[in-house]
Image (cartoon, rainbow, N blue to C red; front, side):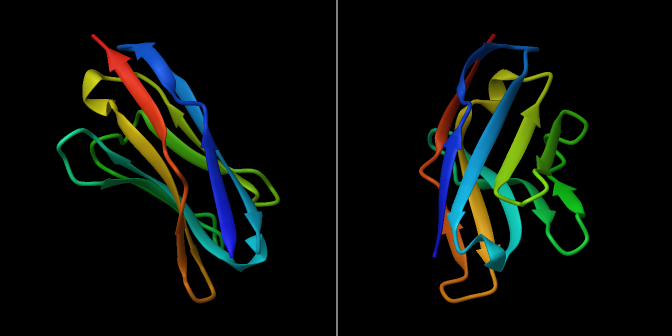
Length: 118
């Protein structure tokens, strides 16, 4: 199993920045990808960004491209989401996600609230 714990959420004004962190523990050697999703009130959970362990490639949603960057530490124990030029539409609970080479093959963190005021 893999456990995920997010941190770094909070309240920020529009145009500001936040960096989210997600600490992974347990069988981290089975991690294939790590990523971030978000869910705003009354909306479905949506993909934000993902990074793959094999080649370090990243995928970022069009809605945050150019503003958000995903990265990991060298040991792949922590994944970060650097969020710049934040907008009120970015307000949501942000969830860390990992896909692993095992069964079950997907884990989620408990979420961290990000609120962007106008």
